Amino acid sequence: MNNMKKYLYIVNSPILEEGICNLEMRAIFNREPEDKILISDIDFNPSDSAFIKGQFEPLYIVNSFEEILEKLDEDKLQLEEFRIELIKELDTGIGYHEKLPYFNEIGERIEGIPNVKTPKVRLGLGKLGDKWIFGFYKKNDALWMAHTTKPCSYSNSLSVRVARSLINIVTNGDKTKTIIDPCCGVGTTIVEGLSMGYDICGTDISAKNASNARQNLEFFNLEPRVKYQDMTTIEEYYDCSIIDIPYGLFSHITKEQQQDIITKAKSISKKLILVTFEDLDYMVKNAEFKITDRCIVPKGKFKRYILVCE
Picture 1 (cartoon, rainbow, N blue to C red):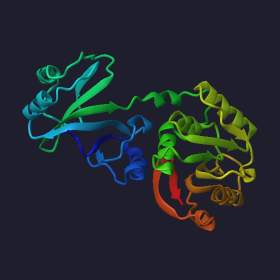
Picture 2 (picture 1 turned 90 degrees about the horizontal axis):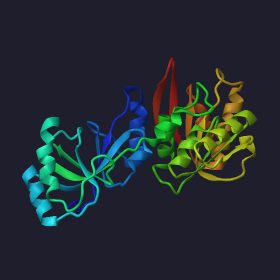
Picture 3 (picture 1 turned 120 degrees about the vertical axis):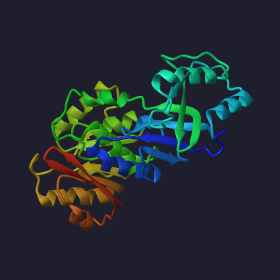
Picture 4 (picture 1 turned 30 degrees about the horizontal axis):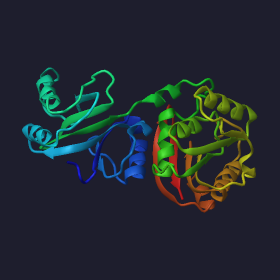
């Protein structure tokens, strides 16, 4: 049995988002994946990340497939509505058309009725190096993909994938943390944070943006936790803030106003994720934040700079 409670995560990202994917993994697990595999003792829901395809919790790590069968004979697992699948990233060398005999051998040793179409329990089979592993497999449900279609959106808005990642980065995956997005636009980060179970709210200085954000939240049956408010009037204090800072190409804003936003973030939150289209390191320093990690996410002809500030 997996008495050490190690989890194996399957991680994958588009090449242009590899930087933010690795930043997210460092924030959650304090390490990066190797060949799309990340092993940790941290139990993290794969559906909370756009980059984690699944979580594998090994029951057995052995030298041969026959040893898996022996372990199953000993343990007499009782499972209802289970499904067995090969984890392609953990290549066993078993071809697609050859897998059925292996599955039958395992299924015969489990007490319960299988359910291939709508299983309550997924079981995975794979190999890591020269070891065979068998255990529970939790797949990313990808329900967050529905959030790509909103009633209100802007061309320069954060993508759902990036917004979801920023939530995990700023909190280190800790859902007890409180978050504010004080320049929330159409509420992309608020949608992702609330759908993941985080305590998050937003404000925007534009009445139209705040209205659009609330409309998006209500569309997904989420609490419309967005206010029409100038962030300089915020008095509450939060663990974290996320700011996709307004930029000159997309809004009328001066350097002084950008600095004021970052400085205000220091007074309302302990930690900041700053998203910008230009190098604003000096403004972060002026606000007495320290940059502890960073990455770049390309967007068309531009680059988004993601700064972790504490």
